[in-house]
Length: 388
Image (cartoon, rainbow, N blue to C red; front, side, top):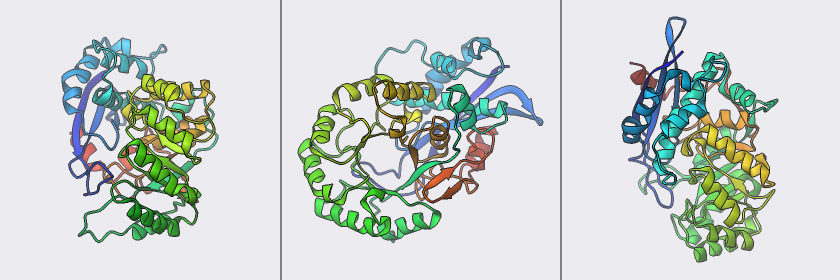
């Protein structure tokens, strides 16, 4: 059993939306296929995955460094001890051969795309959904196959757009969501407070609404917003400042009584160690949003969850960033607190296929083998291009 080919295609994100810092109209995502010599029903078994939403595709790193290293590795060295599955950790190690420590950035995302495709591949070899493969590998029970979910949106649309915040969140509510996240920091404080109050009319309570500044604020602005939003009792206040500004996060945690969320832009276990050592996250309160697709894959991400628990935090404080199907399976398999969804934006990757069960603020993956990316209508043309 061996890997015969690894392919990448850079897929553009649909739509023209922006947060406090970034317009996503030119963003791309690396979709990866890992093909094998295993044949089922007349077709080669192939694993699919992508890095994540919100960065850029890593086609150059994948084609120039990551993919050649994996394909040049002795095929037997990429298998599990039993030889009946591929070993994601070994594949990730091969992809990282000759890389120096540090410099996690886009490299971490490129490796993650291939490593995650191995989890899809192994689940297909076992003919089971990926969350079952993940749970078994990491010794979890996965008794519940659904998790808490919130609809992420509330972006800043172009002035000429017909979109309104109320209409957007009302649409999410009709789909079965009962918790939401909106953007702040892309307008004045007074305008953002008006947006929060508009969103609360749909959410019904502060505990059902989170806000995300996407790293826009300096410390003074972060504290000013914290004071202004405190009376709303929001679910959490996300990424107020630069993700590596641990002093800002620590001082904000000391000043703000509500929950903070951060971590989506930390790309390694080492960076999470620094967050815990210097960023002041609070046990039982704050939310961790690290994303396997941005931090070398599920092997590294699971080590991050182990680190959190070793430091006294709960895995229920983990809500992976990304709003897509891969992190839904990870949240179920690792028994995390939940995950986000992008039901209305970031196609073809955001949100879930129609077969996923969504009701009363919880979501359940389908029983399709692997991550089930082939079930997502918006992704099917791109997967077909890779398969061709």
